[in-house]
Amino acid sequence: MPIIYRKDKGSPLSFEELDGNFLDLDKRLRSLECKEVYGEGIATISREGDQLVFKNSLGEKVGQCTLPMPILKATGPWKSDTDYCIHDLISHGQLTLLCIKSHRSSSRFEDHQHCWQTLVEGLTSAKTSFSMVGLCEKTTIPKPSVGQLVCVIDEKPLKLLISDGTGWHQILTQ
Image (cartoon, rainbow, N blue to C red):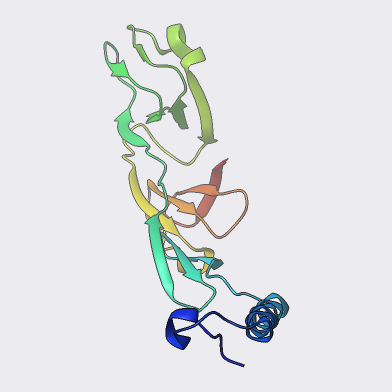
């Protein structure tokens, strides 16, 4: 039964018409209460290369963001009277070292040895320079070249690898 409006009828509604309006509204509300309401939400979050991709419950892409990349600064061999910052990478002898405390080096490495964390031993020489390849999946790691660094993102925890030219070696996990 359709709802009857007094202005359309041109006169007051009868009790039967009022009851009919309320019954009709009640029936409509009950039918809405029985139906599941599907709201749009994030259904999946996936990784495509260095991007996180968000898709809604309809399968549509609703956004993406770039994954952060570790910022490591390869500075080459250790030097005296040099300012070093956290995350600087150096080589010293056969060691690859990560700066864990900013400092200015003195004339002797040993004076600030506590500012460095050994990442790997025996893979580098004092002449090795480093280059960050970037974020890779395990299956897409490039051919190794001496001093290359890569972050493997499809494993948990993330793994930082360094190449000695013949293979890849894990040096850090996040």
